[in-house]
Length: 460
Ligand SMILES: [Zn+2]
Image 1 (cartoon, protein in one colour):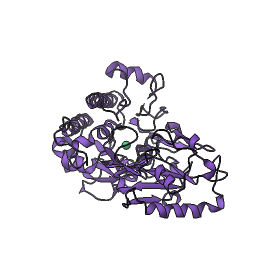
Image 2 (image 1 turned 135 degrees about the vertical axis):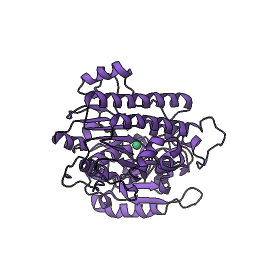
Image 3 (image 1 turned 60 degrees about the vertical axis):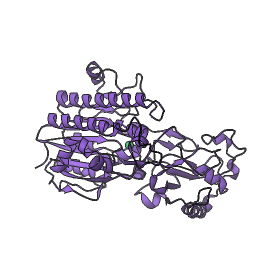
Image 4 (image 1 turned 90 degrees about the vertical axis):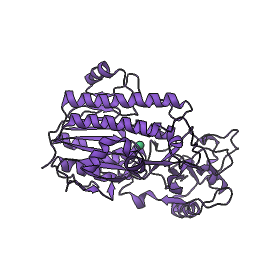
């Protein structure tokens, strides 16, 4: 029993509807894994965002325990946010436990592995690598070895929320091919017992092309020159998955997972405009042009709450003693928050139409809330609306993203496919969660689950 070796292929932002259904015909290799293994939807973390989702998956910890609430997190004693990096991960990830048990590991391109850290094997940083002379491999000698083989490292695609779609597609394809080539090289040359790669190209592809490939997108045009790219790019991923599976051999367990799914984005909810309209947020003067909320324009003494936009809204109260110019007395926080929560749950757009809103208080959901959690986490219309932090547009619900052209928002369900590793082939299953991945990987290597981690071992 148990796997001799294992490869995990992470597809960032892979939705079940496309992988298992619409493009399944373009993915014969993945389809074969499904036919002979176990597959289904994989429920993402809260929030369903790349950071923290991959770290939740690979540590068995929720985002509150990790203290990671998005790509950027609040800085104590300020209202600003700062981009996170690998140094913000304070827990072990699955390759650490495997390494401790003597297995050779190779995490490649996993979000929050920049800067790279020592592992019992090799590590290649993911898409948040800052570029330039910053290290991107452990050990560093691996960098020149890989560059000799595949050219300069491409961690990500530049400006993927832009109009030059043909350039974006070329860049995505070049990067994806390079990543799989690195994986093949590491698998062959370093012989890891456990290798995991994450391909960010699919996420970039969806943000750039979703409107053109999804007939259900509200602004889809049937005759557009990019429609065929859906099956083409999914086909490329599948061809590369097939090559890795062939190199892996029969004794190697294969797992394909995603951190979250994707869905059509119909527009955005301008959370700060809404807070202004409701009297929670005051500006000293209206912004001259619509744009990001400038904190120096906020009249903090008359502000109760403000928000950060993104896939979801993080609403912060302006608390005395916590925020630099706090206006809400700590004894009043609970009452103010409950009132704001009720108002959000009955939010309407400027035409008076109700907007479906899901509001969560972090401590009601997470096992712990480390770092600087938002006071409220808010999801709009089942994630078909993005949270928009910009102000000055005068509307609550808008069609466009403030970060540039974008056709998709993240969705709760990603994908899970597994074959081998002593796991029974169950066919289609329901109820798999992102937290199941770590106990399942450890189970495949015959290792006990570390105490305190979440999730189910699907090899049992
Ligand atoms: Zn992602």
